[in-house]
Amino acid sequence: MGAFLKNEGFTGSDISQRGKPDDKAKELFKEIIKISTKDDKAVNALIAETLRDWNKDSENKVVTELPLNEQGSLNTDIAFITPSDIYCLEMKWRSSLLHDSEVIRETAKRVKDYSTELPELRNLLGNLR
Image (tube, rainbow, N blue to C red; front, side, top):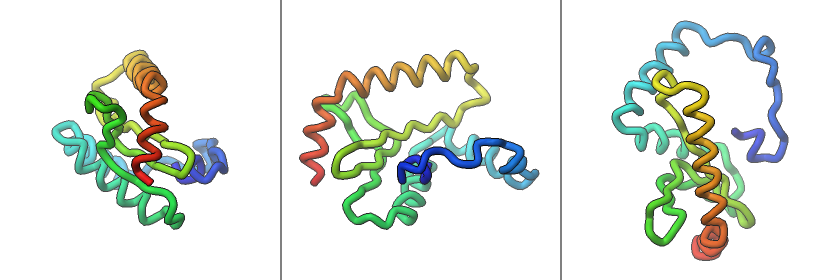
């Protein structure tokens, strides 16, 4: 995420270069899945806090549960807000319960929803500054 947000692109995409998760990492991920299945807001807040620690640019903001329209019907898990853009990070922690096609459908729906609300997102950028 950090490389993308710095406009560096994705690096080290070859999984063999990154190595495989060890047993401890797999167990930690299983714990995160258990927690987030019941309440993903705590995990999202933790990720947002990590992004805040990582982000050194005071013009950027990281927020959770940001309403993206006036009705409050469209919220992003985590929003990384720059002076010109909002990056909406949607976390899907229930991957063991979803098939690839369901993840693709849900992701496409969210992108469509965000695109539909784009004029309001631009207004929101102005209101957050």
